[in-house]
Image (tube, rainbow, N blue to C red; front, side, top):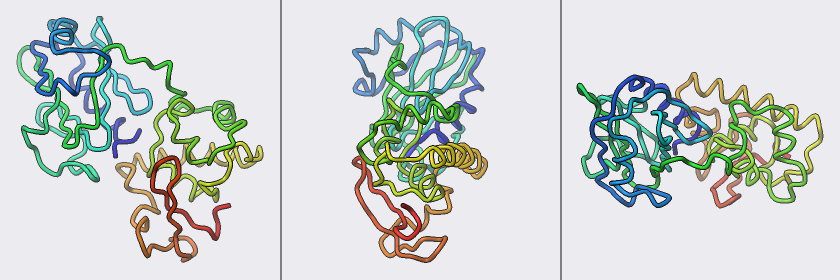
Length: 259
């Protein structure tokens, strides 16, 4: 479930390691290393280097150290922990406890301290020099022109377009359902059919929703979230929610006010 809000929480936690020097790189699950990386390659690239900065683009967490950039991806169930502290203790649909078997990658620091990824379902990954050019603009910094560009000419469903990380980086299933519910837009609407005023409104609602749900504590804190189930009703007008598969993801929406 980690979407942009969860990875932003991980970024804030990871700021604790800025200035620390890497002494040991732990790769207990070699499968978790992506794009040809091996335990030896990653260890050689990072050992002895000092973490200089932590960034995020979409759902990718980036650690800078003067050498190759380390990219961390968290899939649906990955959590970041630093010095035994989790940015999110109870991740929706993720682990609710610590288990050594779930530790996929870790970094120990000179003088003590540790950063690691806990991922029960192994859906995340670690890579060196992640290719950010394949990603669209980060949704938190998304401008109105960026959004228009992402939507223009789209003949497929609006939700599928917003899920496409090459168009807009960071949005996931829960956030998009919440945003489209607030924007009165059907997830099945053709992306390229939105009028200028609808695009402007959608842009404002994206920013407002991100900021509000960030303050609340994550992607699962939306007004629609608890109603996304069989028998669920729209919390705005009481109509039965419809369930569809859009862009390969289960989508919940209100046919009464989302057009």
